[in-house]
Amino acid sequence: MNENAIEGRNAVIEAFRAGKTIDRLYVQEGVKDGPVQTVLREAKKQKVKVDFVSRERLNQLSSTGRHQGVIAIAASYSYAEVEDILEKAREKNEDPFIILLDGIEDPYNLGAIIRTANQAGAHGVIIPRNRAVGLTASVARTSAGALNYTPVAKVTNLQRTMEDLKKQGIWFVCADMDGTEMYDLNLTGPIGLVIGNEGKGVSELVKKNCDFIASIPMKGEIDSLNASVAAGILAYEIVRQRRMKK
Image 1 (cartoon, helix red, strand yellow):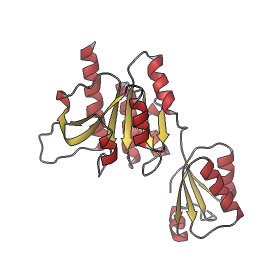
Image 2: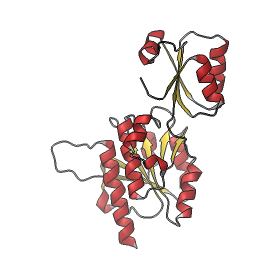
Image 3: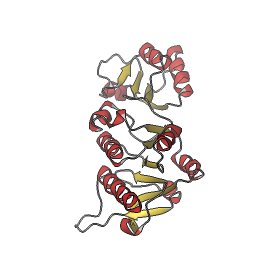
Image 4: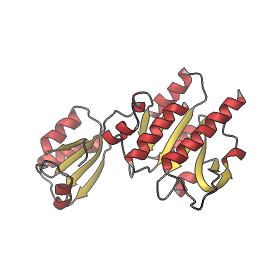
């Protein structure tokens, strides 16, 4: 069971009302009594993803056996706002460098990418609200402390966020094996690096919002890299090009 699980109706209601950041809510199908309706109202206020599942599924998720039809998954760290990431770039008098993740589901990949973002000087990471892992305890451990320094923003719509950032002068490059070799692209200036899902890569809708598609040269017999490895390679190509420009 997730280490950040909160089980039981009253416990979940109190977590919401205390302002705890909830990544996901699991509610038993068909349960519609007053306390559960209160839980759902609080979830709607916070725009929390709700999954309606069978009692058997909740029993599998539960570590206490006393879930009362409700289990919430809390974030280990609070989320930042996109504006916080831009402000960090302004404070450093640097062009924004943001890493956007399109549906990363493995907590170890997310933690490793946050760690890389910190070391490469990225000003923050943006993740989508749905179909992606949040800031779990496993993510925090894998980040090796980077979550204390690198803001992570969670957004409802990644494409819309990209469109808003474009209006502020940021352009986007995504990783895809069919793109232009990264060494042949100009990766300087205000930039958002987009890394896709571990299996499916960058979705078509997100890819359409990217200005460039970058491929990583590979000489082996397989044609793909782990998402966190690809993020590291491209992030440091951005670092290299920025240093060369100075």
